[in-house]
Image (cartoon, rainbow, N blue to C red; front, side, top):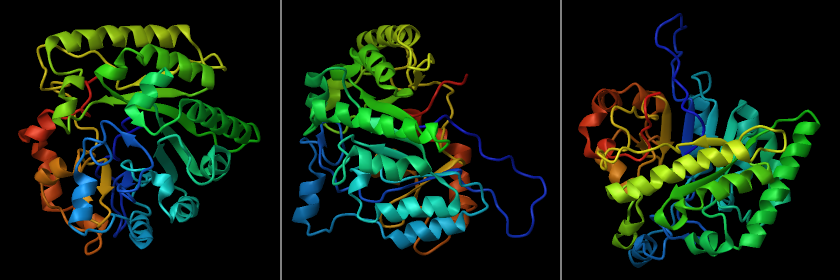
Length: 359
């Protein structure tokens, strides 16, 4: 996930009948089963994952969202504070066959697109995609998991280092040219999963981002979906946490030393030191950045409160399906409000990778 945490509008004030305060951002799981890469940490497309094979053996179709659901939810959220939408962060959203309609809906509603893509820019190439995406985008997060060819390709199986490097140059070039003409300037971000395999290269990723004109480096600690990946967690013991903390310091030094073409610093997000005494809690007293602020909609319409792996977030409750009830009905409903009030009673929330220190 990306973007600085933004507070929801304060309750109260003068509102006309029918007005309400909804999520500032909605993520739509448009096509989580469609991907052209096999990243080792991915819950659905890793070579260690059984989910795609299980779906095929069960005769289940691929999960693909009806564009009418997106259209309906955006219409319901009009005037309720919606500022951004995110297409699927699982799978490759640019493979969604109705993606152009999502771009058109953003333009129609005056809502920005926040995109996470694996950097391959399938079907059209980076230049053509950039021409369509840049005018309506707030942030384009390109999955990036190494400062070297060996590491990046070893994590994002199927990726080609030289190709994705050139894709970034092309995309940033289109972004900069569009901004120079007075158009929208979207942020470009490198987004990674922090693991033993790639964490040592984080300072190098910061340096690479600066040289390419990539504004931000953001990431999150590994969700361990498979036993084969347990040894990759930087949170698994005091020794791994100490290594991580040293890497954080080096990444911050790299951001100071290596500047963007405009002289600014690469923004580092979610790159903070951990306390070795709290292996199971990434941020004691840290708040959830999502509840009451953002919403997730599964491909079948199920409302989800956060971006935790699907099997885990189902444990937080059943809040309703947006094919049958309105977004407002769920957002203001008793079940969702109860979760907001008591989420830290849940083991999932206590160990969540996304909670952040209170600044």
